[in-house]
Length: 511
Image (cartoon, rainbow, N blue to C red; front, side):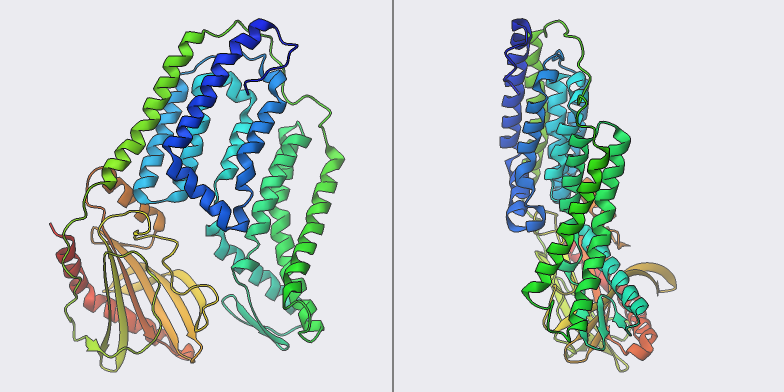
């Protein structure tokens, strides 16, 4: 950013040298101040092939700005205090995300602070001209895992529908389905998220470099979203058909992945080839403005100091919050209530909730009905010890003993009131089936909204209020032919034990 073409006037080169160096210096300081946030991004780039492209996003941003340096040098760098407002808003968002341990929002806020820093020191004219290269930095944030489950269901829907159209009988249960030649399941690797992320990142970059019309850029970017979705569904159907027609000899081992990548690569090649028919890369990228007067260099330093002061406020406050000791907590105990008494365990399944400060797992029985209760209490929200965490789930992918054959938010009648619960149906290798309801309690208020829980707990934390929460999970055996009886058992248990659970929460969370 600091090296400028020799053909530019000396006055222009001099006017740019100090603002460019100061901007780079401030950005490097921010990377150091927010190193834990940046490192959390890099850790995901390293362990996940889906987001490995993150390594090259910042270098691509630098390259994009460098290739525009001749045009950008004609813009007069002019510090803009409005950028500080954007910086403060991004910093507040970072603080809330840090308080709620929402890594992806924290990472987006960090990148937004980098964007706002450039805006503050170099001015809005520079940001307007270099908008895409600066905005491209947001692709470094590893986001998209929340799409895995919807994409898995989309792939299963398409594959089953195409098999039926082909005339092959299918029995489906969740993301598992059976055809005469064998059994199949759509797992995380079949969701197509890796294809989608790669396609969108490359597609948006290609659209920017190849087109000048924002309409064409938008249309090609939309195609880069839709095409991989359709391609992945077609890939899944193709693999099932190859295996079916070969009597389950092909498309089951390594060739399963080879066929998938070859098919996806072919489809994407066609997409980019078609995109060349409307290319406009022979036109200039931006309109070159007339050279302005040299920047007022002394203003750069106060603005740089202001950036560091505003940006540094949030991690300092977050560090102070994290240094507070945990409150004293007694053991988590639930007294029998409503005729439900402790009973022998009836299942080997155990939910996977991590980092809880207090945990209780007990089986109860009443009049021939059996229910398992698991409570996980989090006294305060911090990394790897959060009420809402991606590592809290019913079963892990490819669990050898259990399969999740259906999970959704449903309305349950509990104590005469309709209330949403997260419902899951599990099928064990031993033939046992379990119906599960789960919800969270925040300030004794039940919720199944992860977004609400994260936001409420984060606000409580930054306002120095108690930010504790309780996960409530109940499970009972069910018969596929009479699942309503299992629902009635869970509803009865939830209503009867509700006062006892509330009392347990009051005891453990203190005044």
